[in-house]
Amino acid sequence: MKQAAGLRGIGGTAALPLAVLIALVAGASLLLLSHVFRKEAVEDGSATVERVSETIETWFARYSALAPIYARDPRVIAAMEQSRAPGELRELNLELEAWNRLAGSSDTYVMAPDGTTLAASNWNGEVSFVGQNFAYRPYFKNAMAGEPAEFFGLGTTSGLRGYYFSAPIVGEGGAILGVLVVKITIDALERTLRDTAHPVFVTDEAGVIIISGSPALRLTALGEIDETDRARIEETRKFALSAVTPAPIEPAGSWLGGEFPVVRAPAPNANAEPRSYLHLSRALPSREWRLHLLYDAAGLNRQFWIAALALAAAAIAISSLIALALQRRRRLIERLGERERARDALERRVALRTADLTRANERLEAEVAERRAAEAELRRTQSELIQAGKLAALGQMSAGLSHEFNQPLTAIRSYSENAIAFFEAGRGDRAAENLGRVLRLTERMAQLSKHLTRFARRSPDGISPVRVGPVIAEALTLLSARIERADARVTVEGQVDVQVFGGAVRLQHVVMNLVGNAIDASPSGPPVIAIRLEPRGEEVAMIVEDNGHGIPDAALDSIFDPFFTTKEVGKGLGLGLSISYNIVRDFGGTMQAENRSEGGARMTVTLRRAEAPAQEAAE
Figure 1 (tube, helix red, strand yellow):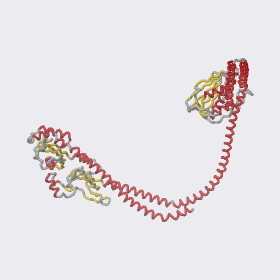
Figure 2: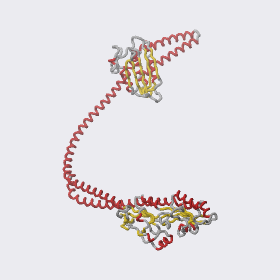
Figure 3: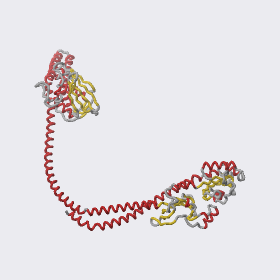
Figure 4: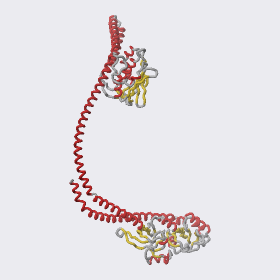
């Protein structure tokens, strides 16, 4: 309730300060937005100027090496050494014409030391340079002085703008025989510049626009041409000063603290109204020219106002949200009061429910403890049942075991008496032979006693890799007397060296139980029992088959239940298969019972295959 009362004190006085704050934030955001937009425009324009500058330098560099190469050609030097009159160098004219066509230049021509053109690529055209004298051009004077030169100007013969590359023609003795000139037009470069996103143009050292994608700006001056530049232009006949007019570019302010000027200039479309442009420029590295870019500020202004309108819309939306929030304040206060009352009631219900859960948890813990105790008792009982099963098996074998021990004891007595008699008669060799037989019989009895002791002792629950072959062999040894009495034939087939996860003694108990049941299942004739080991991927199947009377169909589902037996009363408790089934399940395996189509039963024990070296469990 304190929170609800606090909200009542806030609402009435918060609206006006919030509105003023929103207005101030909106104004500051507009200023910041304008600064960001203009700064991005300057960066974008500067990057464009850099790219266009590289384009211009690359374009001129394509032709700069032509004049020096042509001037060193032996045919040009030989022709100039002949000192012929203009018009008499037909072969050189043809050669210059071919070179000019291949290079894509405007004109290529050769001048005598006095400035007269002796041969030219346009020798056969309507306007020919042959016989013309261009000694007044700077590119001629510099080349005659021994240095390559470049020059921009209007052709006095063609009247077209062009850029000239010249190089001296040097004879064998080092004398300058003349000048070779390559002229290129500016039109191709201007077509390239028109593809730039913003208008660009180039001014010479006098401030005259000599290259521009816009015809309206060509041969116009950005300011007054001083007397020195006027004199140089007239002397070199670069262009007619009378044709140079002021450029239609006017100052229109500046950006970012006056650092970057803004101008009004014609739009690229001749029919459009002049626009505002950000004026950026930089000097071209290899010549006394300056590159200018007019960044379209009108488009930038449109982007700014769109962003400003979006910002204004956001401010209006925020104001509306604040108004809506204030309008819902009272209902929120009421809801908070109801929520606090509901929370108090919920806390009471939670406390009651927590107490119930605590009591239920205590009962559950007691049940878990009882269940664990029952499981421990079950495992202990199961272990005792296994031990009882072993003792029962030993009881069943008792008659055979008595025979196994009595027969060797009788033979030992006879061999001992014979040995005494042979010693008394002085027949030591025969006495030693009888004693050797006594020794072998005692070893046989000791081995049988060892098997019985290991089988009878209690087995631990450990599981480890076990080799199946030795387990089966020892089980059959313990059952040997019973097998002989029943005249049974037992065969072992398959991979007897395979390993499985289990315990040797408990697995031996399973084998003895299955073989013993197979012997009991053939009362009418000699039992034939086959034990077969089959690896199946990550598992191993031990299959025990007999030729007995099989398992009744009604008993197949109950064969592994405790105390269930198909034997006569007094011949079995019904625990053997149940104990074996649980042993195999503890090993992580399965046991199945079925009848064979040819008669008899088949018991299949499937165990996990062990890849590690066989290590019998310490049982």
